[in-house]
Image 1 (spheres, rainbow over the protein chains, first blue to last red):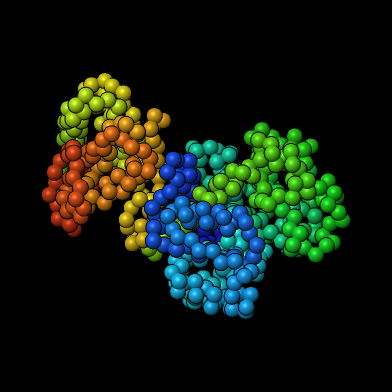
Image 2: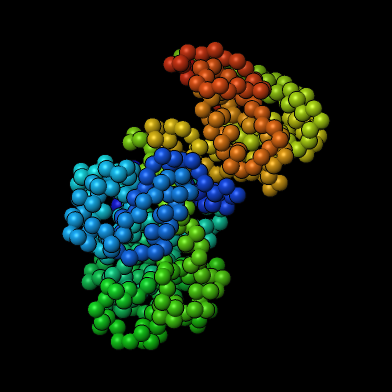
Length: 313
Length: 174
């Protein structure tokens, strides 16, 4: 595997291998010495053309845990704001020694374009492209689901039979897209719950069912409820009447928490709008995996960096 | 054509002898931890631990040490799958660690294992037991306990079969 662009590219075997490697990386994170020498001498460049805290820090922690050197470029305060092209920026970074480019961009398809462009030899990892994909988030989410539902004995297994509800702003969510693709590959069944205004116009090819309220989706007794952030920065107003109405029909409230079956979990990719898509009490409940997702995210990104490192066979 | 060099009784005898050598080398030290290197070293470590426990009952722990991420050829070879590391709850600090693998060849796996151990703790002593030493070392490393010295050509393959995973105990060269 040379680049990590989309969960669409992953076979079931590759996906499970990534989850298993994530488990091994997580084990390393729990040791006294949390570092591996695996990427010693390599440089990971985090190139973020869009605001991000956790993804950038997570990739940074993952690269450092594998003993790579890290350089970070934020578009604000860089030559990008002077009008430098993407190609020139990336070639400059590679000339400075970057072996891996972790790329976040506000436009869909940028990571795939760079990977296919031939501009650079470095590995390209998609850290979120517009409303398209966020594949490392999907990997860490799938890992979190597998670990919570089946424990450490889940090594080598997919997510067959798991029922997952993804609720919220599907239309603007790259997290949802990457998750749907990977969850389907791993054998889970996915239901999307959202107001029509926040659902893509046609999801018939996605292999999912849809539900117009969260309550309807919860009737099917899901194992997992993935709440998504209401992305105020990506939305012009008018997708739903008011925040309180959103919360009433699609928010993961305390009342809805009590409807979940034993062992079911509530996820959120962060950052959370507490009280909007997820109630504070839900986020802090034992069913919430929010902090585990962050912890597993570092391990998942270590697994991706490691998996890209081997020579092409 | 594969030539069989060790049969099941040969392997049993070699492991029993190694067990005695391990006990003899302890010189009064206690706290043995057998760490097998996946895949087949894991099963050999379990067998050696059982053998030593019979020869001289004592505090013995068995674990698994994955060295994949410590290898020095990660960028040259295609990506190897990692496997779980399982260190006994009591840890390895102050213990006598016996590393166990099936074949000793270049010595690079053992070098990686020594790095992996360093990251996990500080044993009093680390020793290395191997079923087959086929020569061709690329690093200044040797085994403390060897089941069988097997001179081989670089282009030959040494195949170790173990009942636990291959259904039969047998070492062949081809």
